[in-house]
Structure formats: C-alpha cells, structure tokens
Image (cartoon, rainbow, N blue to C red; front, top):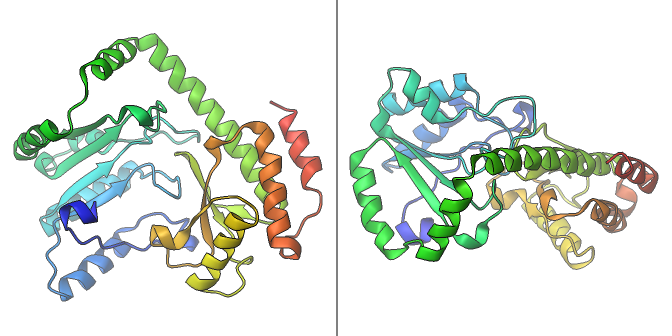
Length: 293
C-alpha cells in the first residue's frame, strides 16, 4: 500500500492491558502527534475483525469512530475481509450497518472485502470496494481496467456465489472448523505456558511470548522469531512486523494446519524455547483434545 501510493502510514498503538482493542484516546493521540509534524491526515484504515489480534469492533466503537472522522474531517476505510470468519459468541457488525442506521456522513465510509479469507480463494485474486462516495467509485471503476477479473473467473464465481444454500452451509461449517482448530491450538500453547488474547474472529491467534524472548526489545523478539524459523521450522509473524510496541507478541496462523499437526508444532516450540516453558505434559493434553473432535 505504501510503496504503490506513496502514502505515509501512521500506526495507532493499542495495549495488551486493553486486549489490544482500539480506543478513541489512542486514535486521538496518534492524530495529534502526526499533525504536530505538519502531516495532513486523510483517513483511518481499520481491520475489522482485527488482524493480527482477532478482536471485533463493537457498534458503540464504530459509532465513536464515525463521529471522530466527522470531527477531524477525514475518511474511514474498513477492511472487513474476515467478516465471515467469526467463531466467538459476539456478532460481527459492519460499519455499513452503523452508518446506514444513524445520521452519519456516508461519503466518508469505504469498505473493502475479498474472497481470499472467508471462502479460501486467494488464487482468484478478487476484491471489492463498497463505498457511498461517487467520486471514489468513479476512480475505482477506472483503476479496475488495469486489474480486471477474467471472464472464466467471473463465470465460476457467479455460479458459486449464486448458490445461496451452499454459501450459507459453507460459512457455517467453516466457522465451526476455525473455532475448533483455534481452541485446540490455543490449548496447546497454554500447556507451554503461552497465553493468547481473547480473539473472536480471523484466522490467527495473538500469542504472548514476552517471557520467552532472550532480551526485552525488538532485537530479542526477532532472535526468538529466527530461532523458531530456522531451528523449529515454524514461521510466526513477530509483533514488530505489525507495529506492536510491546516486544514478544507473535501472530500464529492456525488455519493452515491439520489437527494432527498441532502436537508437532507444540513439540517444536517446546524444543526451541526449552526450559523457559512451564509445562512438561504437552502430548497428553493435546491428544486428549484431538480425540474430542
């Protein structure tokens, strides 16, 4: 995004004590600090459900964000690509629902979505823009001439998406599988003394490995990441790659695994971190949970 458009991305830092949930105070702080540098802010980029944490923005928070955008005269771009990958009890609320039910300026709201996550079709390279702003839509229509979807792909997707029964059953089945795999994976990490945030959606869990890094800081975090990658053959995403200012948090993508893989992953992590973990009964618990599927 940055390389193609030349925009400057300003991270809004969230904290572990708040379960990494976005707050207006954190947003306001980032906004004011950026304005002091005489940088003009155009809009807010959101990920809902959040990537990498996996939490959801509540209706109340979305309303606060819309009010904030109006006060600052900026736009909101909401990435909702994980909207169908919810596995918690909380329901997903799209910003389109909020802006449509209240007296907000719809021209400031733009939603992006794709088929890569919820329908597991990353190879088709199909994305969408949903906007109330005619100027944005007009520009988007012109840009699609350079990245149009092929006719065979369109024919396949129209046939699939028109099958409402299949789509509903697919999403329901997928949600259950994501939830089951997430529970199994998080339980395995907990047996190693590694806790995760309370996530509700997306394909990842946000793991707290602060007590496993050799030194507190980005350097220590990257040392652990390299050791997990080169020794354990496990590729996690370090928090610093996601602008996390608390060293030691890692994003784990559990949806690329089979159930039988989870114990292998846990054993590899245990061997890498060694005595820093606090449990020695990983396989017993892991197999017991696998048997419950």
